[in-house]
Amino acid sequence: MEFNGTTIWYWLIVALVGFGAAILGYFFGKSDTPNVSDIADELNVLEIENAKLKADLDTCKKRLASGNTSSQKENAQNTLVVNKAPTFDATLAKNAMGKKIKENDLKIVEGIGPKIEELFHNFNIKTWKQLAESSADKCQEVLDSGGKRYRIHDPASWPMQAKMAHEGHWKQLADWQEKHRAGKY
Image (tube, rainbow, N blue to C red; front, side, top):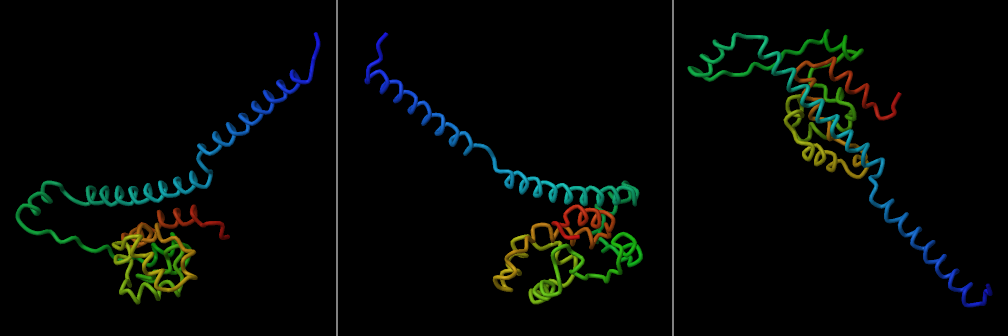
């Protein structure tokens, strides 16, 4: 068997093409895999949605447990039933949160401090109920009104946290905030 110059070049070209194809295949394969931060963001969104659903479920369970369903049906048919606002229990809030809580203090929401609370007050959002009824887009609008330094905040969970505070779900709020502390200790 005799190897001349063309045979070596032939095998060298085949090896280079194979190596190039392997590199391209690696990069194409890597581009299809989801990013770890994307998965973490999606998980965080699902956890927030889950917490909202749990709060709604607890509210429904309390409504079912609190009254007779036949008398509620009669009231609904005969008169307009006005939902009574939950009453604020400072002792229950303090026990669950580990600190004294003032009613409608927006700073109880994880991520809201005195300056952001002031921005919400400028938009006439002064109670937990008003914040709970606000959309995340409205919260972002409030943050944007404060300038560039407030863009770092993510208000996606603020209405949900405010709803828990408004409805008196202090233990659930404390647990949620502990779980989502974002590295602060």
